[in-house]
Image (cartoon, rainbow, N blue to C red; front, side):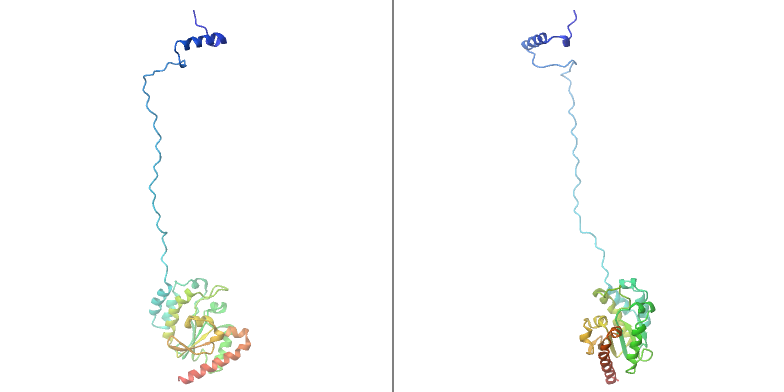
Length: 263
């Protein structure tokens, strides 16, 4: 006789069969599939935790070596034995950023070896375009000023610029640029061998005397680079401030008197 399908048993019959099994000590349910209790199953492999790489302490970021423009300038300037050589050396000098924004090197004009060496400021647009200091209307005014005391660029005055390259528009010269370019200016003065230096404007005073204040300093003799020095108002300033030409005339007379004293 086939056993009855358990799914077809009614509730009470099934309940009676379960109680009968419990009475005989059955304490757990078993599945329909046989289970080999003696089979040894390998323990599941534990996932290995990733081993973190040892931390490497980051050192300081590499610093690009700074360029000592002033030291390079001193080395380059002292190599020049003539004014012409100095101009060549300066034109090839790459350690000043001002060069990259200028058209031309504004180096000199006039007669080398003159008793008077006039140092201007930084080139303006016209000077940068022509590559010469004191051109245009201010150059004409300067020539008339010098002529009034018997001087002239074509005869007995030598002219240069404290800064040989034009400054960025609306900018001013920085301390680093001044320090870099000063060795060239010192060498220029040493090779030109003037008797007197005339500093026209604030930048020229800062480059040679290390200070500004042209309105206060003008007409007062000082000494720098082993020479007597007189600050004067710049011709470009005088074009816009005609009342100051009286002060400029007084300074020109002081220059004339100094030249006569040292003749």
